Image: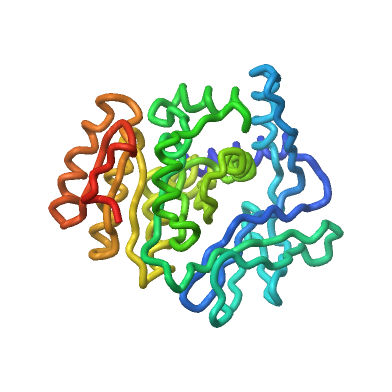
Length: 323
């Protein structure tokens, strides 16, 4: 099945491919105990039109589709901070740099494609502050942004017919995140099943509402050996949580999500794999009744000694789950 799907994917890419100079698209990276992890992707076409508050849904749709018509560039060398690495088959690249002693906060490194004429790109990486009390891992859709991700049709409609100016956030989520972030003291990471193609789009939405920035762990929707759409929601989010916790072994974490996308099960399994590392699990109930499938997982989390909360708003959080 996946072999056929991969051939289909290659055919579609060949039809839609836009030849042009390669461009390095940087993603915000994170720090491991002994290394800085810089991330990005090399593509040959990037279409990003500035949104207009008065433009039609049809124009929004065309602009959003264009974000998915990029052509990845495999096996090219990217350099930054004195290190080099090659892009994989999907154009993604990861560079590991030595972690400077005493460094903290956001660091920037110039990155470029070896042998290409594209301008240098700023590759940012977050190093948690030494006085950080804990970390935060948050979902994006239906946790920070109003999306309707629990309903596929609604999710697709919201994603493809809106733009960065039409999207809305949950004000209570921003207030909670600001409280947990503590003016930059505690690091924030985002884990989402949204595709990497939406990275810049999400950045515009975050900028517009002044949401806390942090490294994002999005999903590659390409064909994998196990699936025609890459890793499953559960596997992708679980692996991302593992990566973040392993990269920050001295920090405990608050986990934020929603009940519409089975985040309770993802977080329950993470609590099992990382005993003593999770301070609390907080889930939004985007639609009344959507928490029913999460209750068993939440009870398991509580049984492991981790406080939980679910409700229609984070404004109603009890003190027992807050720092």
